Length: 180
Image (cartoon, rainbow, N blue to C red; front, side):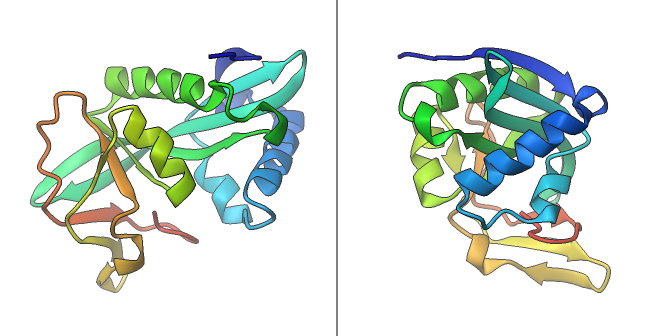
């Protein structure tokens, strides 16, 4: 593993406008222009793990608090957002290093960690012990519960003891944009 950057943790309050612009550019590049303003907003309000090479942002992951309903149990979840690594720094262990810090933060502050993964990202997460949530997903909208079947199979949980039942329905709190 060749992690080419220094990792640091900052709260959104200490991120600063310059880093926010860098983060948006990193997300745009990593997600080939598909990142939205909502995607950036979803990543704010919690902790950011920054990978810096010199003073340049080359990797990022954030951990925000959400409330999820797993079966009939409300879970205070650490939700992982905006995981991205600069193209020149990929496949060198940086994504795994970012996730290691996020997983540690989540274990210390939340009941469990959750995320929604692309097929490419899912390989990294599963290699780190994240489990696919197998139950149906949905969202608690202002109009009531709405199923999110397009997200089924892409949701993951990190609970190192493996005690969480991943077959029950999983409902997210409402937010604008992509609910997961």
